[in-house]
Amino acid sequence: MQLFTDETNTEGSEKSDRMAQREESLATLTEHAGSATPTKSEPGTTPASVRHTVLVVDDEDSVRAVLAEVLDHSGFQVLAAADGAEALEVYTQNCDCIDLVVCDLMMPNMDGLELVKALRAQSLELKIVVVSGMTSFLTHPAKRAELEELGVATFLMKPFTARELLRTVQSELRRIV
Image 1 (cartoon, rainbow, N blue to C red):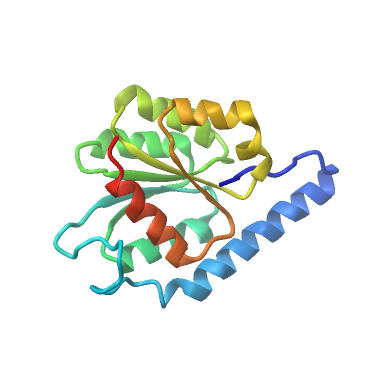
Image 2: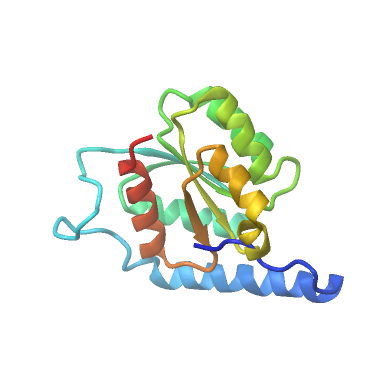
């Protein structure tokens, strides 16, 4: 799955392209949020008796809120952070209960790659899903290889639906590290 976009656009169009991608991601997630709650008969869902904790990291308030809402309504305990630095602090305080981190790549203060490196310094077993609307980063062989060497096996390209988010999270939670 490819997660990076070509960032060689002009400065103005790159910014507007990113804004359009963010708006599309939010609209897609919001549109599908109500129908995303898994049922007992749906394959690949987490049993209600197992409540996993997911740390959601995204600098866009609206995206972070929708991701958290979708996961919460689907039975996950959710912690949230606005950037990598905040996420590292939240993880350090809650490392014994966080099962998975869903993090955006492009964030201020500490980006997603820096966060993954810092989390790996604390735990080699932590499961991480990287999400991004910047496909150029994820399709770049060296960048993708660096994430994979850090143990990131799951990528999710924005925009995505709530159902895709849930399937990805559930699949990563089942993956043996």
